[in-house]
Length: 330
Ligand code: LMR
Image 1: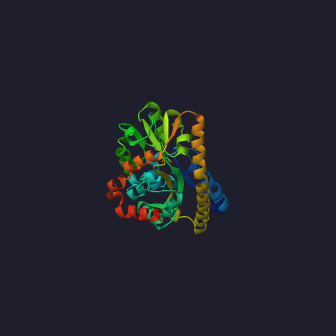
Image 2: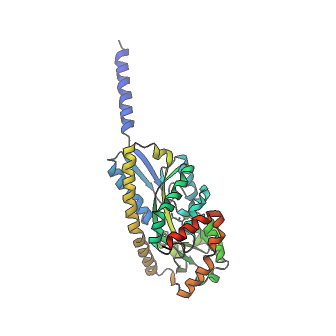
Image 3: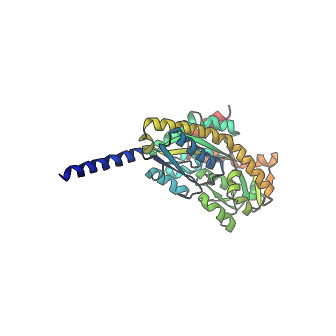
């Protein structure tokens, strides 16, 4: 007698639990290393809004900025393990993953302007590079933009000789290592979250980054000089754990792809604006001396840095470098 109501109660409990589980939102943990008020930080929040709206709340996006969840190196490992579902690392940070070709984006002066850059990222070259990530259990969704980099140090950087013996913080890229050596500096690869303290304490003498990162990390406050060199580019690839992405219901994946497309358009629209505003804010802060290179000094930097292409062609691939040079020459 007693068994029947018990079984009914148990059946009801199982049903409620499975319905609750079925209705529980799919969670996307989106970890990144920069401040929220940067192009990437704002676009991550925009993606969250768009994704949650497009899926009617069936997906919840949790954004973790400022290396709060994982630092540079750890975040890629965490993505492969499925501990986080989405990242947008700098294109300079895929070497340790074994996809060295992305370091082509670090080559000094390889992109004369943003139009040339977008022709590469939005064209077959860019798509082909994202495809290479699949062998690592990662799916590439989009390229996000930051901008052209400036150089800073506790010494005025006008000509390549001014870099002699300076310890310069770089991202974990062999191309950036070669770039700093070509200037006579000593490269030091450090996680982004460690850059400010290393500059403040003198562990390193200088660094490079787009103005939006320099400003939001207050690096300009611990650097006496900043040269507006635009010598290289920093951008991102938005990536997801492939197993997670392939395992999503088809309608959800389509809605998320739509949200990512819109967030990417937004991200590109704010990137240059934010970097221009950051540079102006750095200037107005009076905390560091801004210096613009003369045409002659620009030519000296180019002469010193363009040979890096040859030095790293074996690592990155001669064909890839030539394909990008052809594309950007159009
Ligand atoms: C850096 O490490 O300097 C940058 O890659 C940080 C970022 O994600 O913009």
